[in-house]
Every structure is written in structure tokens, then in C-alpha cells.
Image (cartoon, rainbow, N blue to C red; front, side):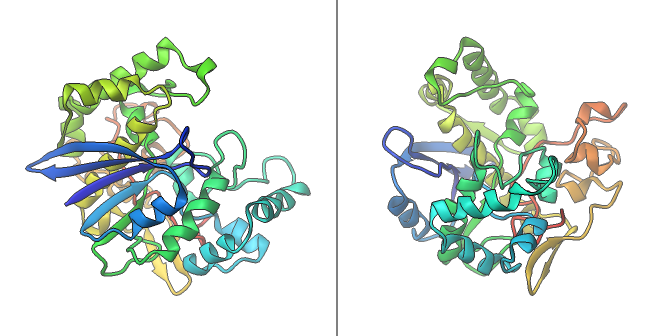
Length: 328
């Protein structure tokens, strides 16, 4: 079965394509078969139409916060919300986000989903810097138009499964907050390369196997290519595949019980205060004592919990919710 990862861009080109990693999970090992560019959106849509079975993690937000969606008057069901965003031109979409922020006080302009808070990631409304808002506009309507299963946003019986991924969750386990990539040549550094080398070494380590339950198999040339790519796109695509592989072996793709589905789409009720599994980590008290959710996925650092071993910084599909009607 194909297990893939996609490092996404809202403006694919030959210089900066969407990047796809194709892997196979065989006897407890994730085998990297190839990494290839996807130069445009037509090729991206063609990839979504490829026959299954496959499971792929995509590095872009699948939804917006409930607060924003309700504030701009968009439908709160995930499918209709994504279609509403996709019906707008890029300038019109940007104008909606800018108009929403204009008269709001500082600190209340860009909202994060519960999943963003737990993963310590930025708001999916962000238009500049890392433009994940533009990535949402380019990506979410396209997966909504495909006939794939999108848990928990639009789960179906299709054998092609699309998950929201966040490669930083894997990277932080091995390099912390150290930068390891840049699209700007002037900002690419020896320190970045050293961090990529440490991250690749981490992927083939016993620590990774203990945390994720499988190994990553890399040929020497492939490992060197990952380290040599200063943009980090190839490495991020592989990290998305790692998260998809983790999800594949778990009930409901690792989505915790706190994620609920309704007629309006997926939503978050709450995260039980002292239940590691609710944050998507193994529910084994011998290895992962009860950790408050803020340490497992939220505002604090796992290391800030004295006496607790930090849970695996894995995954994808519980970047919850990937739907529009999220809490927060």
C-alpha cells in the first residue's frame, strides 16, 4: 500500500513545486521509494484521482477556526465551507481575511483551531511569512472536490485517505525548535544543514522506532539528498509520510475520542484533562504517565512537565479538527 507525504505550496512552479514522497510500509519498515515534484495544480488534482489504496499526509490546513468561519458568515459544514472558499478568487479570499482583521483588536485578529493550539502552530488565517491561509485556499477546495476519504472532515469508505499533516511535530522530537530549512538562499546556513543531518539520523534511530512503532529505511543516496536539500521540501514530504504511516496502524487513524462528528461537520468538544490517548499518544502509563493536554499538544513544552517523559510528537489526523467548525 502506498504511504505518501506532500509538502504543499500555494503557488507551485518549476522552481518551487509541490513535493511528493512515495513510500511503502513493509514488515515494520517505511521504505522511501522516490521523491518527485508536482509542478502545478493540474498535476496535484491528477494525483488525488490516482487509484487506491493509498494514504497520504498533506502539509496544509484543511480548515479554519469556528470563530472565523462564523464571523464571516461561511457555512460551518466542512464541505460547504471549503467550497465557499474555493469559489473566491485569490484576491477576493485575501480581502475576506484582511477585512475580518481590520477592525479587531490586536491579539484577536487571527484565530487558531484547537489542533493548532495543541500542535503549537500558527493560525490558518495567516497570509504572510508562512502563508498557510493561502495554502488553505489553494488546497482545501481541491481535496473537497476529490472523491477521497478525509477523516474526520469527510470520512467515506474510499480506499484513498487524505490526512492533514504537520511535519514540525516529527522534527521537534529530534532538533527541537532549531531551524533546518529556508526557501531564501541568503538564509540557508551550515546550521540548517547540520539540523537536517540530525533529523535524518533521528529518523533511522532506535528512538524513532520506540516512539512510532516502525523504522524508516533510507538508502545512503536518499539520505544525502534529504540533507542536501536546503529548502527542506523533500524532508518535509517524508515527514508527512511518516505521520501518515503512524496513522495507518491506529483505529480511526489516531483521531482521539475528543473529536466528534455532527451534521455540520467535525468538531472538538474537549480534551480530557489527564488522558494521554486523547492527544494521540500511546495509552501506556508505564511509558507515558498521565500528562495534561497542554503538555501533550498545547501551549507548554513537554519538557516543562517535571518527571514526565514527553509523548511522541507524531501525527497528523488528530491535527484536530481539520474541519471548519472547530472550537476556538
